[in-house]
Image 1 (tube, chains in turn brown, yellow):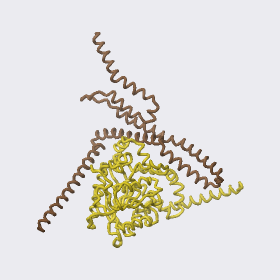
Image 2 (spheres, chains in turn red, cyan):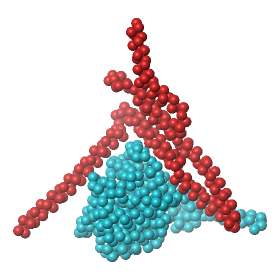
Image 3 (cartoon, each protein chain N blue to C red):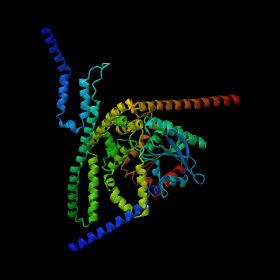
Image 4 (tube, rainbow over the protein chains, first blue to last red):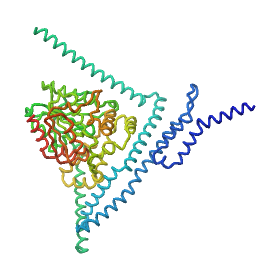
Length: 215
Length: 362
């Protein structure tokens, strides 16, 4: 009996060491706001799948979080998209402040804005400059990168889901078609090379027969 | 100005604004989609390679300039902006100036084309079209005229097949993709900044997810380059255009062209964004196409390099870098004023005449 309990204690220790520590770290990351800001839920689920998965057993279904992953990707995308929209609020405040500053500078230089048309021109210039500066900033670059990543991850996860359905309905999948296109592309290149070799050989033959004819 | 005068002035401006809106609205109400036509200069289809087509612009009489010209636009956007309307057609002006013009039409790549890389574009399609033109005219070489990315493809072609290129003309073509860092401008080089902010994995993931880069991605990037123009396009700009039938049709033709955003083949996009924009391999002498090194020292034919100091898409220094990069002893720079697309849709024939005159001497 003691031997059995010892064996189970050892098992618990192994499981804790191999899976428990990593999974605890992963679950703790759920409390990190930066994870949500960076659209990191879907990658986290992938890591969890890696931590909890077992070797494939032929006659049993595998531990697969992919249906959850597509929902996670969508949540990530929504989160990043909200950040993308939200960043415009302080930007418009900045534009208003810059516009007020320009109005003051014009007045001090003796070129006060007199008509709505002049005010609109000044406003447009301020909007243009502020947006261009923001578009080139590191903050915007980071946000763009996150949005792009969230979009592409979401698309890839949706594709995986879609392909599973397509397989059930015996329809071609995107992955299969991509492989067909890859082979087709390879064959086109081979055909082009063969045509070039053939043209070169023809030229050689013509040159040989011409020189034989002249001699 | 008294308060009453200011009030009167404001009311007058408001009334004038209302009149302008009414005029623009009735002008727009008379136009149908079928009325907006572009690329009307007569042309004939010469051949097709895969989904790519070679066109020839029909001319009335013999060409003043003997060597035919193959015009290659970028894959981002359709070539037909070069033939926007009768009085704003860069290609028609070249024909009128005496050139024999052929045009590369990249078509609308589908997912079947996603593996087309620079090797296919340059050694496959461009080389195939050059061979067809040479055979038609009984020549060993022709002139290449490349615009933007088309200029880069033409430049690489000239480096890999110098025996088939008699003259090389590049317009608003980037050569040094990091040159914007030497002169940072808020109104130019946004694509350089944006691409460098991404990692190589981001680009690979984008291509893996999409296959081809959707045209809308390029459209979004262009919108970010000129934010006010984007915001004001369908209010202030359209209002201004609606004050005259000609201006309105010109606006609508540009819109028609802009709405036709072909996808960019994935493999070529990866090279474009990673090997050029991020790693700047061309000017560093590290770019390989189909395993062959693109050596710009092999570009020894006459070169005419056109660039614009006010180009918001391609930083002028990125184009001017060609001077020190090619080995040509007959290298000419032609600075022009205007935007990246603006110089090709202007009424003025100055650019096309300058090109024709240069070709007449070479």
